[in-house]
Image (cartoon, rainbow, N blue to C red; front, side, top):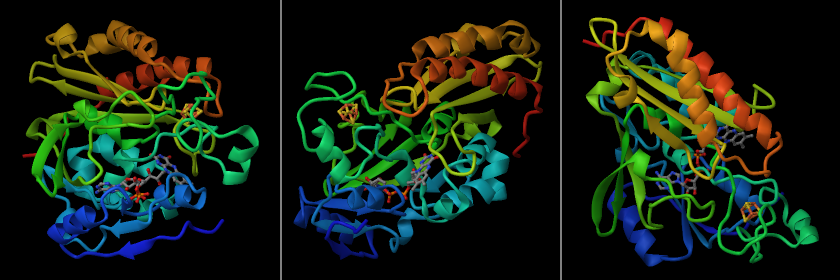
Length: 331
Ligand SMILES: Cc1cc2nc3c(=O)[nH]c(=O)nc-3n(C[C@H](O)[C@H](O)[C@H](O)COP(=O)(O)OP(=O)(O)OC[C@H]3O[C@@H](n4cnc5c(N)ncnc54)[C@H](O)[C@@H]3O)c2cc1C
Ligand code: SF4
């Protein structure tokens, strides 16, 4: 497949990039690693005339104690000892995105903004033309649930659920200033609108609260081929344990079983209970509740009933694992 034509810009400063966004308003995309976007450009999916590459902007890089630059490569997240020590669930999730080759180019910011996926959308122009296309591309009707209002394409990023359970926020910069949005409030339940980011905003940094480095965290993923594929379902959990061995924090999230990654905070419900109770009664209760909140559509390869059921199976397994781990000391 040949890329759709575009003019490439490669600014070295954030203000330069934002000025380019104003100059080409309505007809540009930001480019990070390109592993998702350029595939969509090859499929002629909503391609623009101008592409503004972010890789030469120093401010977008770097791994700190409480921040991760948006241009941090997934290989770095998976392999950097500081990330593994402070946020092990994030390192786990980054290490199972796509393949090693893709992870060398793919970035954190691009992963949070990965395009929602659907069997009817991620196809060549020829394939789409034979079926009449759909609401998210050239037509005006959804093929999964016939109507003209909402797209049910699945949010299929691996990192968002982990960052949500860790309590992360993202810093956005635009020509009119900066703002910080909690990741839990970032995504919108429509596969076309997808999130609250304006077209001219750049994700600069992911911010993690100090508490995140004290939590046990993990990620479990269901996919066809463990060497390459997007999630058909993924679950993340974060568990905080106090000095007396009691639950201080318990948050869970799922991905790829809805139009958004979905977070549920179980802290109020279970705080103060002994960690040993996770294996006995808490894990099955929480996992069943998360299964009930999953709303997969019939638009990826695996059957919806199976993807939904696996939320419970994988999450119960993950919670039992976290309950048996020792808390990491970061000081
Ligand atoms: C074979 C294959 C398998 C894959 N498997 C997985 C998988 O298992 N799990 C998974 O999560 N993903 C998967 N992906 C998708 C993709 O590789 C990753 O999500 C990757 O992290 C995207 O990052 P990127 O830097 O390449 O994003 P890009 O493709 O460069 O960008 C993606 C989107 O984000 C926007 N964007 C990127 N950075 C910024 C920023 N800083 N500010 C504003 N907008 C920005 C772009 O404009 C674009 O809309 C797969 C891709 C391929 C080709
Ligand atoms: S869910 Fe419907 S509108 Fe969205 S990509 Fe699939 S077919 Fe198109």
